[in-house]
Length: 206
Length: 215
Image (cartoon, rainbow over all chains, first blue to last red):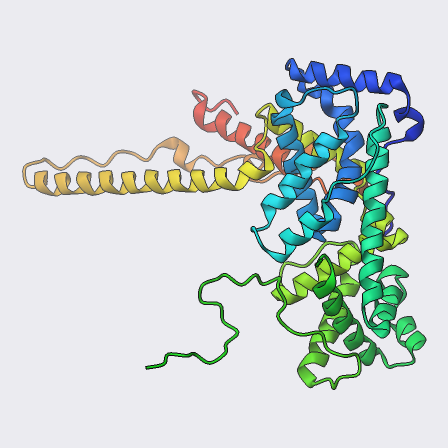
């Protein structure tokens, strides 16, 4: 069943300086003890954190939700250390979430290396407007993931690339994929199995 | 004397990351043996069943790694999958709500829950050990004093032990507590369980801890 996506930070509202001021005021209230003041901010950024920071690094919906919860708990706990710098809190929340992802994986593990490779500093000009930071960061992060996936696919055997594009990117059925490649379903299953193994070996490596 | 060991898949020191696939990349046209064909067919089934990104609990480490890789590709490169895998607003609100409640101590923080369960289990084990020691000590004293004590007349059975419990105290529907579960709220089982548990705990307290068992 298709579900509606979480709302991303809406530029129309977020680019309003009043929204930035509201965010600052809410954070100050939360730092003074009224934690519930953070609720709208956390609800606004939970979706982008989940979709662009956590899930693409862990590949598991259940673990991603768990890490999102851990990240928000840690953010609330550490909110006293946050210093307002005239821009959205989203980059700070993103770093908290990244740290939770890193903590999840052992140092030196393939997953850890991959998460760190994907966390390279984003070259996004910070916009001193409320949600613009979040919008830019989330979009840039999404673009980088997509480019990295495309780059990895380009490095694969063309038949592997085609199998992955058909089945996982275009999301066509096994039968359609097999027909498009002119092979039996069983042969396509083996092709895709090998293709994802090859992709996995290549993905995130320098 | 040489102690060279033959190559093995085992990792006695546990230093090899199961995610690090040591196998070389095979060519698409390489021969397929029966075990690979079976593994590929099973993986294809798993892939079809996990379009929503939720992975089944029982699978091999390699299957899990490949399925997670597939979710990463889908989430990063497929627009349709990205929308499907996104956090629903209801789920996002539930996660935020739980984090805020954890912050004010109403519920355990997700990361703390397991540790807290372990602590409770340890405390329970210590308590049981203490009860066992005390029981043994009483038994020894009773045996030693047995020869000198007069038999005690058997006490009549407490009336409360035989009084039938109302059905509502033994089993009752949770429907009035949680109401109708909308599809959008289907993932909020933990919150519903909290409500049911709180109600049952309140009932237990009323019956067992209130003088006369008010409830």
